[in-house]
Image (cartoon, rainbow, N blue to C red; front, side, top):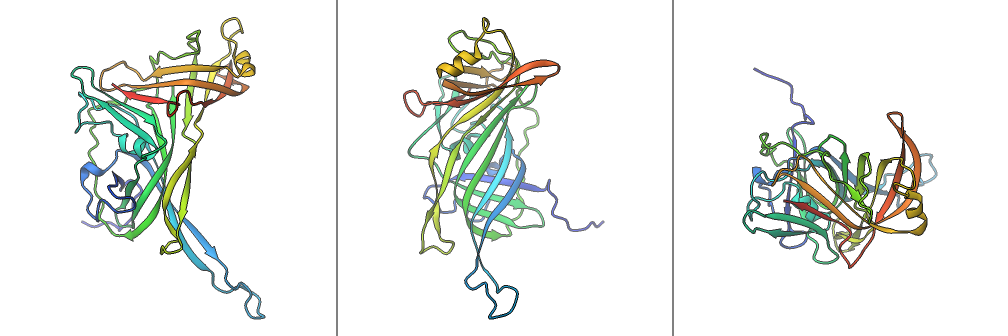
Length: 326
């Protein structure tokens, strides 16, 4: 039997691992199934630059050849969030743990029997760079080092929770590492945005909504190095400005006064979780200080809604958000 040789979009995987030494490839060309993320919509964008040393063509029309450079590559992908399905341990952690860590989160574990949990909070120092391989059957393998990422988390009613990541890293090699497939674990169902126990403010107001979107707001910058072949020594997160939005069904001010909160610049707590409420397969979000920045009216299924934009503010430091798996 025979078929054409095609680089199928579905025959692609992404592997990720935290680096011991910054910018040093921890895979060394060898990827195991355990290194492969259960990710979807994997895309690669080389950050190509072209410099014109002498665009004029010695009196002729047209242009001379430019000087190309590929200092970085961006990799985007999505991971539906779910727990481990069993008690968390040093060898059983959330699938999205490495992407969270690469996006500037600190992973804290508690393996107390019967109450095991893993918590992700933001950090300002000691962030963890990742080596990333994107493997393509019948195609190019992209091998990146020193990667850091930005994130977006979408909670759409009734649907799985989606973590979308954009990682930027230094090109180590455009190679030919063979495709390595991961382990789907199809028996563990993905939790949904339902039975969410959502509340906001001192009123513990349970707004009705169809979607919450959170944005990491990480600013990723290159470390310029004239001694490097690609002119960058690596990348780093120099700041963050996390934000979000939600579409709350309109209620009277006596029930919850969204515009009063906006005009006063009030700081409010906000919490919710995934459903069903199943131990070891639930995700909880806690934001101590939300500040509304804008409100615009809209419509959803014939009902008026407030499209609310907000920022996640620092309280004591590195505490804008916590994401708990328990």
